[in-house]
Amino acid sequence: MWPANQVADYMKETAIHRAQWIRANGTKSIEEITCEFPRLLDTPGMISQDFSVLFPDHAERLFQTWKMSFKDKILCFASQEKKAQELLQNLDSLSPEVQSDVALRLLPVILPTPVYKKGMKMFKPSLEENIKSFIEFKHVGTNMVEYLKEAELTKPFPFVLGLGDDNQCHQAFVVVGKQALHQNTLLGAVDTCFKLFYVLDIHFPKQCAPVWEFLQTVVYKLPGTESPSVMQKMRLQFWSDGGVVF
Image (tube, rainbow, N blue to C red; front, side):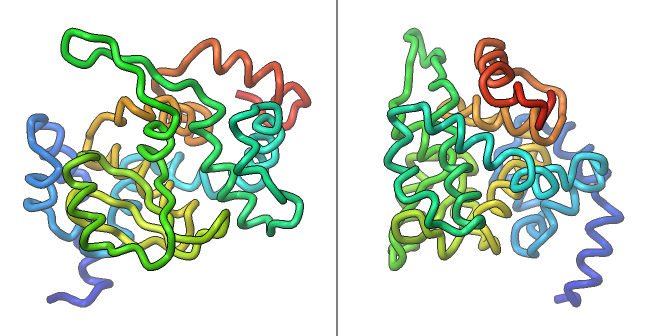
């Protein structure tokens, strides 16, 4: 096995080739892509590095803006939503880091639950399904082997897993296929998961697409679709003070 720094250098040099290969083989599954390029997942930081090569002007936007510009706005907006009150309990006693995590977990609550076609019928997932498709929160001590077996069958798309108690996230992962990729923070896990969709060229899961589309267009400033009614509501209700303009 090559030293990690040599792997990173080689992966950086081949990022454009990898992106072209993935997009030229649009029918490939996640498993097939990661089988062709195993270092993407088994070497920490490679997803973020590929994204940085492909989108250098957008790579750091979540880390640069979330805590400074978005966190408090999201929490303020969510305080008006009855279904958000459970996550907002004792908010003032929480550290800024934990408040940041709470704001992330509130995105599926304040953004619309999508309606989409499934077969011949229109389908609307429950709020719980919407939330867990973005960030699933489990207790510390969860049997990860059993959890990943179940997740592989029920959620065939990348998502974030947080392990903790109440609002405290002690461990964060990006779950993709049969793997749980450890991340230093919940914010880092959301960042890596978002970038994974781009690097692997896969669609956002329909169950929580509005959340990823919000991050895509508002936070990362990348082209994409968005819900006009939601964006208008957000502009009027909690970006009207001039703090964040989009």
